[in-house]
Length: 196
Ligand SMILES: Cc1ncc(C[n+]2csc(CCOP(=O)(O)OP(=O)(O)O)c2C)c(N)n1
Image (cartoon, rainbow, N blue to C red; front, side, top):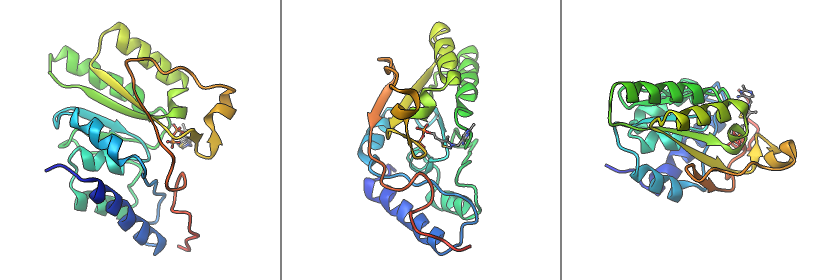
């Protein structure tokens, strides 16, 4: 069954509550303001496709079919930044750019095995500016690999404007799915001071 906008928003609110109660002894990165666009993007993503995500992965995980309770328990366990599921073909990591070469390798394996699946790699606007992105993008295009990138642009790299860091932002190639949104929550945490 598909996940609704309300379910996504309420999930993050539930995480916010337990985080502020000091029950999660690890960072959390909450999503918000991008429910509509993500629901649209995930309509194109087959359940058997692979999805790669980052430290801010709760929406991607839920939309790719990871069970809400399983996800919540992993977050309570302090594993919010690295939600992985071999059953659901989902991989995430908190290392900026870390998922990109892994996603590339997965796409290469799918092509070699003649699997009719696609790898979807979600990255932030700063991750898009990294060297590792540009090498992997080039390789994936030159070898015609089933790898799609989605750039989620909130204009910030943690709290530094990406444009300030680079003086100007790079042009997004036309074969990359791109959307802009304004952050609802801080980069990590909820904006409240939490005593653990
Ligand atoms: C290798 C590495 N360097 C630095 C960090 C710290 N860090 C975490 S998120 C982030 C910014 C990433 O910006 P962007 O890709 O735009 O993502 P978003 O703003 O959506 O979180 C940084 C520098 C990290 N996690 N990994």
